[in-house]
Amino acid sequence: MVGQGVLRECLLDSTVERVLSVGRSGTGRTDPKLKELLRKDLFDLSGLDAELRGYDATFFCLGVTSAGKTEADYRRVTYDLTVSVAQSLAPLNPGMTFVYVSGAGTDSTEHGRTMWARVKGATENALLRMPFRAAYMFRPGVIQPRHGIHSRTTAYRILYVVLAPVVWLAKTLSPDSITTTETMGRAMIRVAANGAPTRLLGTREINRLARSEVPSA
Image (cartoon, rainbow, N blue to C red; front, side, top):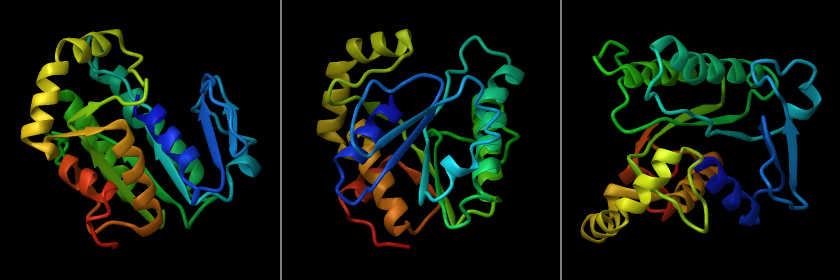
């Protein structure tokens, strides 16, 4: 869902010259500055150096729910895959900014009781140690889909419909408690271009970045 939103904003933003979408399936979008690279096994990016070189930023939006998964299974997608991709990109693009979509409540200590939070924390810490120009961890809470975008997880789609009135009320009373797919995309582009004062960005910081209320790093 976040990936769809980020892609939309990148294609609309005149400062973004070209976009490479890497995934297992196509985006369904066509645009002169969009190139898609389909790879059945995202753990194996060998032989793609020429295609992956020369980019200023990576927006890593791939993720899965932890519901019904063992820690090992969840870690394979959340930690192992993210780190594998980042390790492939870092030597090719030392001036790159890496933006990772994490989540509110992520455990930076890696030792808390909540499984998903530990794994997300380990992933963040590994990325922050890598030799990119900069790495930023986006930790949104509730994300409101915009412009026809929807989650691929059935349970999430149902939840968004059921809780729509609550989300509207929360956003009205406390604007910085909720963000949107549009806002996430705009904030990521801003961070890639200008940086941010902190590496860990919650919903409030994400919203302010999108509104250009946060100074550059």
